[in-house]
Image (cartoon, rainbow, N blue to C red; front, side, top):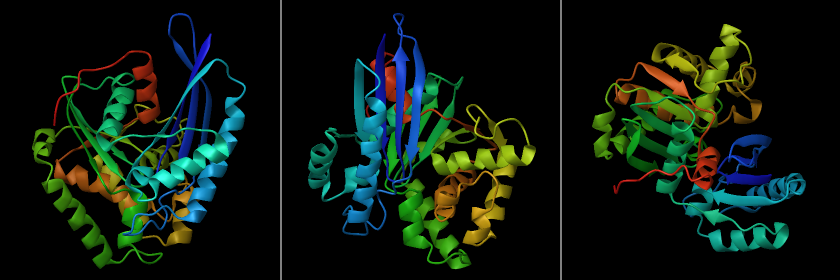
Length: 312
């Protein structure tokens, strides 16, 4: 019996998953931890990781190392995404993490992040043709799947944290702020030539903000565990209704929405605007949600469930 683990060090959260691998290479998840570290907070145009964010992140990683000790032999990967990837003080941060926690972080490209999302989704959901959309804290990954194959992928340098910081100044979003946010994101999408191939396809939504849509809807439906959203489907009409409701609320009111975590309430509008904009952009009438993404993609890579990837 062996163990495989992944720490996903994102711009908004740090997540740890550990799987027990049996003799037949069948994985069973035995640990799943999350800490909202907000690593990309206040990075600004200078793109530097700030001291409070680094302190929070290192504290979370130290907590993870305590959980890891019980599982041996363990193959562990620590994969950092947009915040670390874009930081001008990346090297100093990685050295500091190594010194204080003993962990060696691997910084992955945006394209690799999209590929891992595809592997995590494709190995656990019956998708044939779809646009995978992972909205994180500092980036949004898009992956076009045709006939179950990954044919295009891209990482856009915007997510829930940096969009919120750049466009939304108060507790209530103004019409001008919303217009500028949606217009600029749509203009960014105009530069992704292959999105025309995604017209009318369903969106498979990943990332904490996108999953919040499903959790809110499941609470409204009072259907089982609202956390159990893997494979859950939602109409565009329902998604738009939730988005409109959230737009109409101030911060305190958003914190009280069932299914919306209080610690995400300040960035949820910036986090949901990309997927809501994409629904219109590709004229999509439905969403499917995935709990599996980067970490599960890394797991299936480890288990040799790899795919031939095209050149962009």
